Each structure stands twice: as C-alpha cells, then as structure tokens.
Length: 535
Image (cartoon, rainbow, N blue to C red; front, side, top):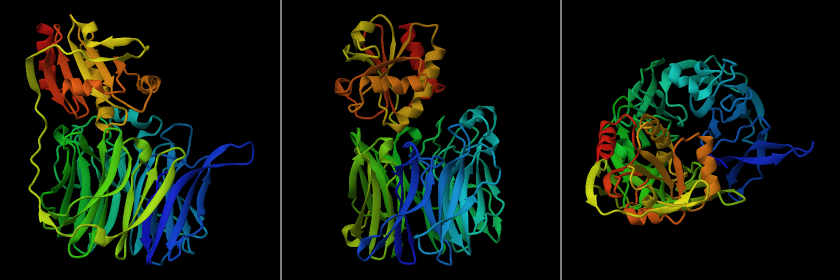
C-alpha cells in the first residue's frame, strides 16, 4: 500500500509499505521499501525501515525527498506509544541512490506521545520537512480539539546527520489532510488545509521569503465548513515564480476539483479553474496530484467515484485556464483501501503508481507518454454548479423503501408510518457521508424527546450487513442503521448523489429533500424537521 514517487537526478524512485513477518513466532510487522526505475525496469527493492513500530496508515503515507547533493531522504510514521495517535516522523537517508539507508532520527523535537505526520519535503539549499504536529493535543488525540487544542504546521531542516529545531508556521490546521511543498524562486512554499475557528477548512499557503516565513494566506476562499477532517490534502508545484495548487472541495455540498495559478511565487493567485465536478452518478472524490509540464502547463490527476468503483483520471491544464480532455490512468475503488495514487513527470513521460486493493493488494506502476495526454486545450466554461437547494416536495406520493435492519429483520418506510422520519442515504466508502454521520447523531440527540426517527440507510454493495453495523458501532452511532446492498432506495427515490437526506411525513409522503451533507446547526434543516413534526 501507500506508493509514492520521486524524480531525482533523472531517476524515478518508488516507495511503498508492505507487511513482513519476523521469525520470532511470526509477529507481524511493516516495512518501507524503495526501488529505482532504470533502463531495464525496476531495481530489486531495498528496505528503508522495518518493524512493529512502522505505522501503515492509508492517508498518512511515507514519501521520499532529495537533497541538493543527490542524497535521498525518506520519512514514515513511527509509533511512539500505545495510543492510536501516538507516532513520530521517522527519518532515514541514503548516500548511494537508495541502495542502503541510515537512520537520521525523528523530525519532531517534542518527544511527546502525540500525532506527528502528513509530511512533505522540499530542498532549497537545504532539505526541509513540513508536517502536522499534535504536541498541543498530547494524551488525547483529536478529542482535545474540542477543548481548544489543535494540530499545528511545523517545519525543520533535515540533514543526513541531524534534524534542526523545528518552527511553527500555523498554530491551527486541519488534523489529517496531507501537506505539499515545492520550491519557488523566493524559496520553499507549503500548502495545506487550514482550520478556522468556525471549522472552515480551505487551502492555505506559507512561503519563505528573505529568510522569514510569511503569515498563512488562503489560496482561495471556498468556504467549506466541515466538522471533521476531510482527509484530502492539496498539491503544489513550482518553477521560478510560477506556482500551481490543486485541491478538492465539497463547499456547498458540491464535490469539485479546483486548480489555481500564481505568477508571483505564491504571493497571489488567480481565481481557480474548475477541473471537475459532479455529473450524474459520478463524483470527484479528490486525492489530487500534480506535475509540471512545459509551456505553462500542468497535469492534474484525481479520483472519480461511480459508487464503490472509481477511476483515476488526469488532464492537461494551462495557466490561462484552457484544459484538455481527461484520460483514465487506472481503474480502482472509491474506498480508503485504494489510497492516494501518485504521478511524476520523468522526461517525456509520466510515471504513475497506485494501489490495487484487491486481495492480496499490490502496488502497480505504468509509464505514460506525454503524447497520450491530449494537447488540444480548449477554454472550458466555468462550471456554475452550486449546492443542490433544500426542496420542499410536499405532495409526492408515499414511497415504500425496503431494506434490512441491523438485527437482520426486513423493514420498510411503511413500517414507520405515523411518525416523521429523517432518512439518510449513505455508504461507508463515501467520505462526505463519513463526516456527516456525527451531524446525524447530533440531530438524533436534539430531537430525541420528539417522535422523529433518524434512519441511516447504507447502500454499500460490497459490505455485508454485519460489516456496516460494525462500522456504525465503532463510531457509536445512536440512530437506526438499515442496509440496502442492491441500492433499490436510490432508484425509488430518484437520486444518484451521496449523501442525500429525505424527510418523510407521518403519512409516508416525502416532504423535503437535501442533496449533500447535512449540518446539525443549519437553520434550513432544523426548520424542515420542525415543519415535519407539526404536520
């Protein structure tokens, strides 16, 4: 799992995580491996780090960096305690192009059992590591965020012999979105998902200019407010004063891939172009990557889901906003097991790598000639898709949605007649759905004393009922869980977007519909529920 790519000195290096077994009783451990792509193919892999402390995390994945002297560096998540959020940023270096590796130490200098990860590296005279740092949350993981503590963004200079003391760049950032770093003419830049006091989580940039770090600045104000981390970071590339940033947003409950350009080294950005948005049953789910091409162009890649299935696709985009048609790089899955596909430019080709999540999982790679990316760029009209409005649909005839309850019994909406129902269509592989579940729990608690019933109807095709129920139990969801693996509900209700919520009246009629994630404090949602309770 967790492939990543680096181009250094004309060579392409691929790193990944894999399970290994120790001989002392077969204890399971994980190792970080690397191979180099040469004229005759991939070299035999070498091991960077191995052991029970190497953490395998689908989103916080290792990467490689290169110093200006040709030395290579690698980082990985390394357990530092018993808690799930207790791990350091382990570091190693190689002076022989990845054949052998020597441990450097850890990037974070606090030595606390806290979360440190989501690392990116960039070299400008010296190699710098950037990471999300949870020292202020030590002892409680993400739960401390409610009491004022938050993850911070920090950086430190890394050499083969030591790690310099770290600096804080932003005191409050999103908990688990990847960072990305590059070097512009003025110095290193790092982009990341920020976190406002009102839980707005848009993309910010910090730059090193004249040996001083600038204050965080928004790349673009999407205005995406989300109560939990989207686990979907941005990507930046730079050449001279030209900087490009790609990212995913779900602002307004509309999934989008956006791309913004700067001609000022990241000091200012033009309004973003819309690379992709939701069409029919297909929806971009992010996990973006980006590579620089010649002629003021980049190639951006991202995942698009069609329910559980997904395709990894890419397109050329010019700094003036013109775009080429999309090309499918690979077919995969929309769930977390597929990870974050990666690509780099290597000469006149792209090298792409991704996780094939089928059992046993594999890391795959392909070389794609740049000629395969359509170069007939065209001006694409700005997609004006906005959030699907909450709609009162009073008068729609009663619908009979059938499913299976958590205990295995057959259930339907008709069984709930006489009580208003907030019916939510969701799936375990749908990231917006995952972030919405706590909001549904809050609505359930708020209206517990009324006769409103909150029902979350899973349309997972490839998870069993027991797996869906176990997923809900781990999150301590207090409302009813139903399962419809054939997804008859979507056809009956006439929807293709997840999540989607319906308010069903006491007579079984649909009173109100909302496409996209709900927020428990949204006045429109609360007003719709109150209307349903009065009817």
